[in-house]
Image (tube, rainbow, N blue to C red; front, side, top):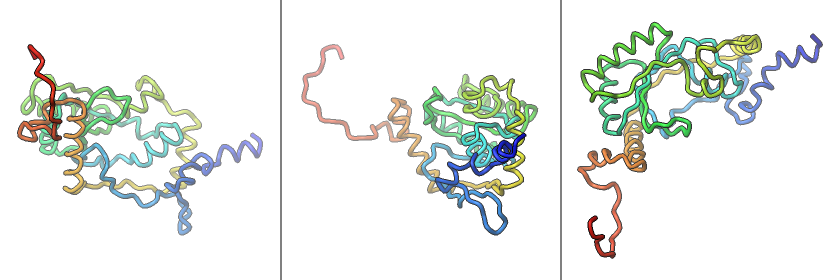
Length: 245
């Protein structure tokens, strides 16, 4: 391999340059490690996190490895999710209460992603397939006791975005280039897992977002949270009633 090719192979800064350019990443002069700028708790998210997964570093694995480098981190191969699809916002709120009682690593909320064809979602995070099957059983039992029948539930591997880019999750594998980049980044970065709990002021904001999303998408069960009343003042009308309407 030529010296130029060797430099290209080991040029981690160029791979991450967009994240350095937008200020998300920097090199700390104290320990010379790549780090994330100070992270803040964003209120404008569609999810309430019941409990963080203590083993998952999605800031690094998803935002850096996948979104920037187009690779799947080796730890993500062991990520499985129990996914539920509430059919109404009323069912979402009821499921939220069930999830709080279970107190497992999970989140629930509204689906703003344009490549997910459902209005609502809930995700339980699992470390490995066997753990996923165990959590699936626990969640299914809780649903049978506390929810209306028929709530869709599946066990899947990794993130939806992974499947969109890489296809069938049974075929995931790390290429030599991906392993090399992961080794370089692990040796030269310090991006720790940060587990946090959202305060009530953020949860209140997000719950209102859920109901506004339901209203926008004609989910009439949202009106039950406003004593059956509309969320906005309706216009005064001047036309004659339509016969038979």
